[in-house]
Image (cartoon, rainbow, N blue to C red; front, side, top):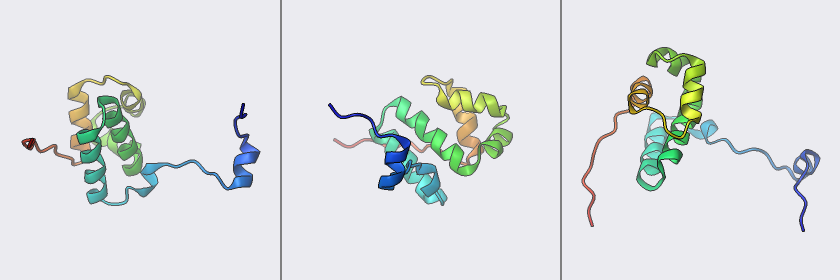
Length: 105
């Protein structure tokens, strides 16, 4: 049975933690990321994607713009079932609008 890698093993192998927030550098990338997650992911994955986008844009800034306390924002985006009203406030703070489309068969 394989044992888990230690921090030293990871450092020796050059393994680092991946954070998608570091790569979301434009509104276009953010829109594509959220659209794909909403299209193909679960509700929980979409909330996690919102968390990633909020970190990319800056949690403090999103908290101020949404009128949600920073700690509450962290809690909301780590919850699997946030209130829709809160999600809308977060999307508005990010200047993100969800546009419905009709699915084709």
